[in-house]
Length: 148
Image (cartoon, rainbow, N blue to C red; front, side):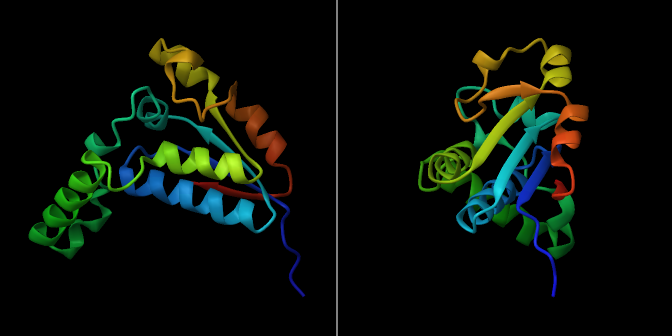
């Protein structure tokens, strides 16, 4: 019988809209299933979390380009259109919903904030604190760790 982790830590480094949505969806699903979820925004994801939300301006991962240029461009355009007119919530809004309805904590990398000259107050309200990567990894302990 497999032992299931009670804790999921997600270190977010890729600031593409598809990966940020994946983080939000995984956080919501894991917390709904009873897991404590901790998300640390690092790298470009700190910039992506600035107020106001600019999800519709974020790129789609080039991983999908193998489907062909026309298909990739169409998917990217459709996603940007849906985000731009508010049909889809931003990834931060989805993450905020997960945090409100489950055990999800979202923090920003202290080093990245310092490097970018940003403060916590400049980030979306879903980001509730600041942490350094070492502390985040230590708190992850024996739980599951996902780097996206």
